[in-house]
Image (cartoon, rainbow over all chains, first blue to last red; front, side, top):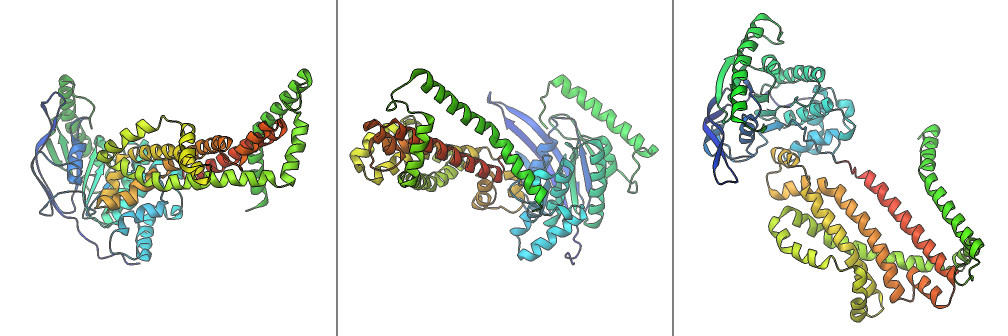
Length: 270
Length: 260
């Protein structure tokens, strides 16, 4: 079957982005920023940060669920004004629709696009084959394990042929082995369908395994404390000397930031 | 379906109904004991056996069937009418805080008035025709369906709404149709089930007061002519039908995945 010509991802530009929340006492609390960041087309960027640093807020803004307090966010040069199917998303809690079957979940985003029913089904089945779940097409969501659910969610996210893929701690709720498996699967699919990926995690190992570039965020208000380009061929061995060394550097910064947020008594907001 | 599979389903059904069978037997035994020990006048409390004979008699001459049909038809029509109004209203109230703020005071002021308290007004307005009884059951079924629907919409996981918005529901209407409605369906089914129970109670009460047909009339008439056996037959039929309807709704609930 033919699945359109391989598309490239599109660039993301984040320009002096800030997000503040009003507190109940009438004050303002700085959640995020200022952040300035350029993500290249088809780049796989992983954002690591201590809990409460605002990395999820950042992704919510990129998705278009939240508006920035100031600054600009441009997807392919166009300001983000709301959610778009061109910036599809994988959620930590899967966010599958329990009243739909596996394949219907993958089709969900396709239905709004200009596809016939038959094309929808073919595209969805193609993505399910890529995550190895084509034989579960008609299963109900409740029958699946957490790892299988997240594979369905990945298939759903890739099915709509987005140019940007946002992943919000997608493997955070999975056990360590399932997590390894899905990291590999995600890379395999991404090698085939190169999209711009912004991947949030609190796992340094995961960041080392996946990212073209790793960004480490500070404690609240979260800004980018450090970044590394990871020029290591995939599949990567995270126990190699080079990556071990990088891991040490990342942890050094994270520990510092965690200590700082501990002193500030910052809550547990992701 | 293979035979062993079917047998497994049958035995599972048997296992589920066994406690109910035991409870029914205990009720009959206690009833018989009371009769044996206290020798009441049969016009006050007949034996289970005499009641069973009256039951068969009423089934044979068709009266029980006709009365049951009347009661069921009234409940079903009023309950459907309720659902037609309450489900759309509940879906809208659940999605619009403004509408909820406007409608809620009416709901909270009217809801504590039992549907039974509406019976006299229903008679004054509609006489003892069908309209009054449908009205009483409508009042009794409306609020459970409405409140359960509103609660269902409000309990929709915000992450599912976000997923809907990412995956192509660009308008509120599309999000409503493709995410909100299906996500709140299990809660709607719960409301329909609860409402059917309250409606079933309300129709019997309405028929006690103002009817010439129906199971409520059957037991009221039995009381008037001092035929406790007829009263008990009517009560048994009310209980049995109520139980069967509830079992039906529980099965429906399982279909619609109450787990979400």
